[in-house]
Length: 257
Image (cartoon, rainbow, N blue to C red; front, side, top):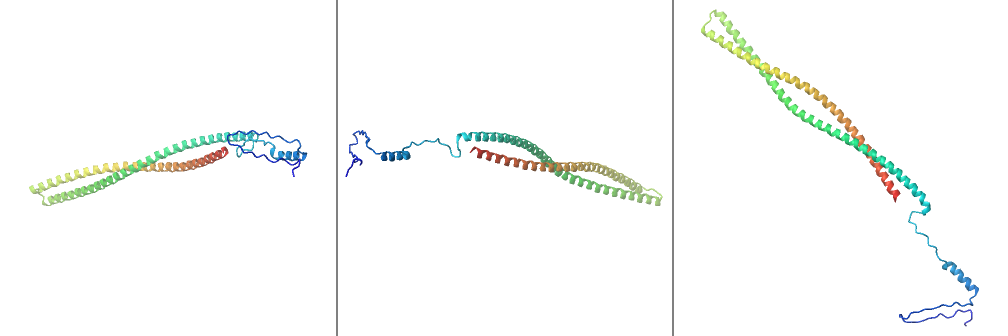
């Protein structure tokens, strides 16, 4: 049964798509307070307009709260940037120092190479001079033996002349020949002895230069060792600085994110 309080049946209308429809809904004045209360409750839950909150990017709580943190982060970034510049200056100084050490090391290596080449050439010249000196000594010994033999032959000739007590043409020619040979052998011995003295003088100069070269080589070895140690120390220091710089860059990138 339909009563006054029962709602009217719904209106169901069929119209074509081209026909515009305009409908006015009239509220009934006989609605009960219960229905109004229910309607109010429903509107209180679902009809209340929603307040749109501003969109906040992920990771940031609020603008007002993050102003101070952004300033702190900016100051930290500036401070670390300043420290990064200081580290960069230190790295530049280390690189300049390392470049100087590398240059010195290159110069020392070139000197060592030149000394090695000089040592090889000196070694070859030393062997050549040694062979010449030994050959001169052998020649001087041979010439000395020849002079001694010629003196012996001359002495024998003179002794034979003393026994005969007369000087024949044969003895005179033999004596003259022995005298010429003796003079020739003495001249050869004098020439060989002069060459030997020159070789000994050159050998003495070479020995003195070799001793000075050995001293220079030892000094260059010491400088090279010190440069290598300094180079290793600077490389280690530069590696540590690069690691610190990479860590600082990663930290700055993490703070920027």
